[in-house]
Image (cartoon, rainbow, N blue to C red; front, top):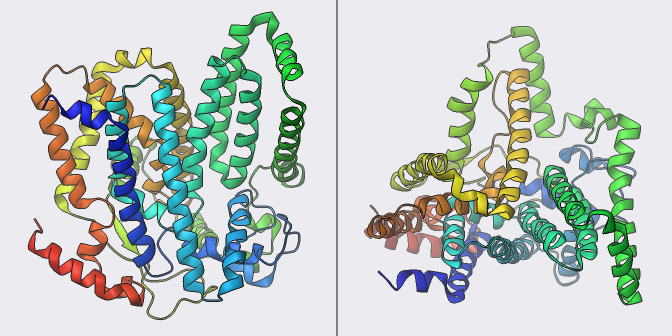
Length: 490
């Protein structure tokens, strides 16, 4: 028992954790038939369109792009543009779409491993003990939904990496003597991250405002003098490179967000504001929302107030999503532009995993409410939690406004919250460490690990999956593993 903290706190434990994650996410990337849940066909389709041009700007929307809504002024385009280059490279060797998808999936798994490294770095920089950091990342990796989010073609893994990257830059702005260059790095990374996914705006705003405010407080009247001194003492290649990157990132940011505000009076214009209604109707989510909005205008169905909606709808939906194992099954070889799949099959996962997860959620809320004062000494973690809270608040407000407009919840998904879970888990563990009962903590840790290992990663997919869920070459291996697991199934 006394050796457990030494083992968990060792860097080899973290490497084993990354290996566990790669094994599970890699198995899903290799196994699950295209398209996987979470709009994989949407991302692959846009990547394919970008692969036909060198410019990141699409001025005239091609007809086949109607399946994806407007792609000329949408703000989350940079991932698709960047991913189009490995897509083009693979195209030199094969035209097989299955190969393209598997390669892109494994690139996303690699990016997610990089995100784990960055999460570990920022938590250690927040002066949290390696033991608590590794346990927090253990539970993050064992959240069943994470492997699905990482193992498919999507911009999610890249956003997971960019959030801790911005946090690291913000901490360096406050702590480092060369803070000016870290401030430039924060601006560059933050501006580009908002072009990966527009939901990065709250994180950029909080990190930049807090870092700049604390630096101004520390430097005082010497702020500009210190900045100019750092520029003067740096090699000219560093100065020129930073200036080019800053100019490029700001130009891209202004072109998209500034252009949208000037032309459409909003950061993210609706599809119908840019394209014709006929075009937008071919995009599944837009057509669904338009139909629901019209129905609500005529029927005026009653809706719950925000408190009832939050407690009995939004929170249960978000938490339950963390334990789902689901795919879009395809009956034949995948076709690139096949539109939104119609048949969703899935499983809620093992009941014990779900019970432990809900108990952990409720217990975590109680522990943090009881011992919240312990977090005061972890200022960097508090900033990360504040950025996450602002993001979740905006997400919740948007979900509720759509619920009122449509009289039903839409776009409520647990994967939108995954990126802040390492910070949340770390906060819970810090508060939990106040309990001076080692046997209780070790026992709870062991039980939670057993339950989560049984329901984490690829296991629910293998245990409950159907042959239709897999690529043809993975049907037999998954059935063999399923038969083995059935002997030890609880």
